[in-house]
Image (cartoon, rainbow, N blue to C red):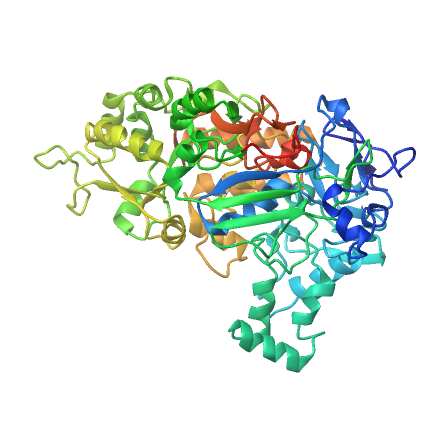
Length: 639
């Protein structure tokens, strides 16, 4: 018999969660009273689940809020509408403030040895359009989307495959879903709680009208022509965009729903009348009625925040903006600037592409002596003082001090500024020949022009690279900086035509034993050091390139060993081994970490933590801090 663990809504974010309504008397939401009175919307008693998630805000030191108001924030690209899915953070399971997994959309779940997961849904839970949310929505995704060759030619997502085996999925009743593997899948729940969740369910009642198996053929053909797509599968995928969050007709379970009044430059999100969470006073969350997202130029975010034109803002702001934000805070008195800790493993990291198409350069990039030499010739102290007033932490990329796996030796590895030692490493590689200006020559006679491509979105990255170009010249390497559009950058890295790229460090800089170390191994195409190896793993060898270096193969083997581990002690041991390999091999040249992230908050906005961690993974930026619990004290946004 396996060990059964049952997880219920007994504690979340340190909040007491009750079953049933008990003595809690539901209060109708002011925003919906007119529609309820007119019979256009059912009363709140019929909108929330029979057993909603009841949160005790007082238990976590927060205030019970007031409903109302429109929160203003900004994005720099229209596609960043998806940030509302990140911030809303309604998931089957979520991380609490201690980074422990708890049920959210689920009423509870059972876990037998990380092999058999039984999900229990909330009776009476509804999609944002009022239609029932139940196991049919999971069955539709599994049978008719994930296992449909036209919609998903490569089959179900890779995180559901354990050593070549997909789960047995069953649906015993309307409120129960079971995923069963013969071997452990310890990262299953963690992936469901991600900032970008996989959404293993779909609103079947909406999407089946776009599915060849269920739809009226004539109507489907009409829609295909109307939407100007090639096939029913293209049409289905176009309207099925739960993460993009740009289809106002697609039902959701998020706290806010995109409004049809939205424009390209101004996106409006209105509270979900069927949201599953309430406070202990019987008030349905979210407190805030609407979120207004304005699309602005990247260079205007700090200036507009300084002018008091937002109520909550972090994206588009960086450390360099703190001085102007503090000045605006003092001048107009409309907001305060909080400084949150940063959860990424590195603020700025340079990734030599070990899958670079140029064979001469590829051999050099794969030589650890070259990567170590580059790292040792970065003057991190100068960059820290020039860009962050010395407040960031200098060193190699590794787990942050908030993680149990932090090791000062890993942070110090090959990160001391030592030009003489770096020059000796390059000479030892046989790269001693130089041009008249001191730039080294490659074995084929070309000058050593090291091209680093950037997304061109962060000025501190460009500044750090400018400083680094001077110190790298001292070791005979000429740094060439090439700013590109983010999507073009990713494409060039993925296809092996980019020599190196700059990005943040690992999204999750605070791993725990239960955190999958997959992002430390060549299992993901998104990791800029080995995109083709990651692609090979993700496609089960159908695309990309097979790992052909010992240390990366060791990382891959260890990550698979973690997948099979059954104790936290064993998983922790694997984490430490993998972090040690990264410290020694320098796959990402980190410059600095832990630079504070400025958070602009309206003086009228409440329940925003004074001190917190700004992290994509785990945490979903504002998501883990529960944006649906933020409220305006006066019930309206600052003017």
